[in-house]
Image 1: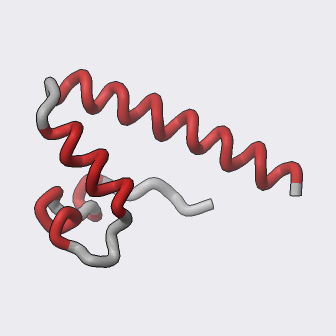
Image 2 (image 1 turned 60 degrees about the vertical axis):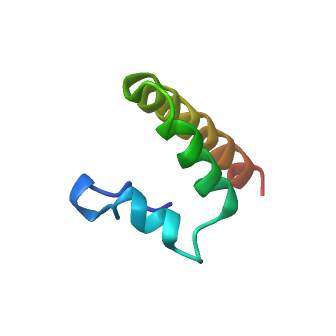
Length: 63
């Protein structure tokens, strides 16, 4: 699996939103998160990332 990106390796949010190669899901999620409390959005995003990472590892382990 890929190592997590460091904060200084991440693009700016505006760059992701303008990137035609970025997924619709990522852009929609960013738009939604930007209208929320940033602490709540960051916390929920961390939980989402951990849940999806676990699901990915489970699927890969089964194959």
